[in-house]
Image (cartoon, rainbow, N blue to C red; front, side):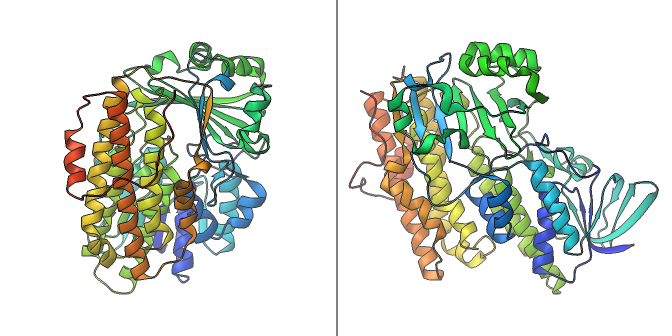
Length: 531
C-alpha cells in the first residue's frame, strides 16, 4: 500500500493537483482520498463558484478543460457593481462594469458539475480515487514515507512519499500542526441557492439602462450589490440555479443579523430591497443555506522540503471578493508540482520549498491588502470604482503576468525584478490606505451612470495582453512597463483624492512614489468624477 503521492481531499484543489501531477509526471502512483460519496449534486454547496483570469487559465489551458468549460459551464461577463444600498431603483445608481466582454475569459462554475467531471477525468488518467474515506490519522515522517490511516468499509493504511492536504476548510494538517494564523480580516458570509434564475436584466424597463450594456447579459456577470461594510453576490450556475451571498465586515454588520435564511431575508429587505422581493417571491425554490464566521485566515507553512504540502483552503483563504480562491489553488498546485518533480529527479528541494513559500506568501499578503479594513468603503461610488480599477491593474499587470507566462517558478526572473516587485507591493499598500482615508472623508455622489471598463483603452489592453507569449527579455520589459503604469495610476488616484478631499494625508504614498519618479499618464486613466 505504498504510493508516490497521497492527496487528502478530492475537491477542486485535490483533483486538479492530481491531474497536474499526472501531466507532469505520468509514472507517479497517486491516490486521492475523498470523504464524500460521489457523484455530487448539481449546485453543490461549495465556496468558489466564480473564477477570474488565473483560475480560469489554470482550468481551461493548463489542465486542458476548455471543452468542458465551454459546453457545461457559463462564461462570465466580468465583475459588475451596483451602488444600490437601500435602493430598489437599480437603473438610477452608479454601475461599474464592462459594456462588452473583455478578451480573457472567466467562468461561472457549477462546482457539482465540475467536480463530478474532474472525478471521471482523474480515474480515466489512472489515478486512484477512493471515496467515502474518512481520514483518522496522518503521521508525518522526517525520513521515509508518511503514513495515512483512513476508514471506508474497513480501516486502511497508506504509505506516501509525498502527502498533500487538500481537505478544504477542515485543514487536517493545518490543525494538527497548529499552523492557522489570524490575518486580521474579520468578515463573515452567508449564502444560499435558488433553483431558478435571478435575471438582473429584468429589474428595469428603462431602455437607456439596457442600451448601456451588451445584449441584456448582465445576469452572466458576478453581480455585486454594494453598500457600506458589505457586498451581496449574484452568481448564475449552468444547472439553472442562482447563488446569492451576503459578505460583511463583522464590526458593521454582525453575522447574527443574517445567519439564517429568515434573518438574511430581513437583512436584504433593509439593504437590498429589490433582491429581497425576488427572494421572497421565489422562496419555495430555496435549495440550501449556510453561514460562515471569520472565513479568512492565514497559515504559517504550506510547503515543506520534508515532502508535505497544503493547497487550497486547507492552507489559507482570503475572501470571496474578486474570487481569488481558484487562483490560489492554481498557484499552490503549480509550486507543489514543481517541488514533487524536482524531488523525484533526485534534487534537493530545501531551497526551492523555502523560496516558493516566500513568493506564495508575498502574493497572499499583497492580495490580503485589498480586503483588510477596506469594507467600509464598498458603498462609496467615487472611491470604490478607483479601488476596483487599481486592484484589477495590480492583478492583471503583475500577478497574472507571472502565471500566464509560466514564470511562477522562474527564480532568476523573480530575482531580477525584485526591485520593481517590492516597489509595486509597497505602493499597493499605500494606495489602499489612501482609498480608505478618501472614503471616510467624503459623502459621495451616486448618480445614474455606467462606468464602462471596456471604454478604458489601457484597461482593455492590459486584459488582452495576458494572451501574449513573451521571451525572457519581453517578460522583464512587460513587468517593468506595468510597474510604471501602476505608478501613473497611483499618481492619478492621489490627485483625484486630493480633489475630492483637500488636505488629505497622503505622505506615505508620496514617499513610495518618489522612490520611482514617474511622470503622470499622458491621458486620464480613471473615470471622470461625478458632477
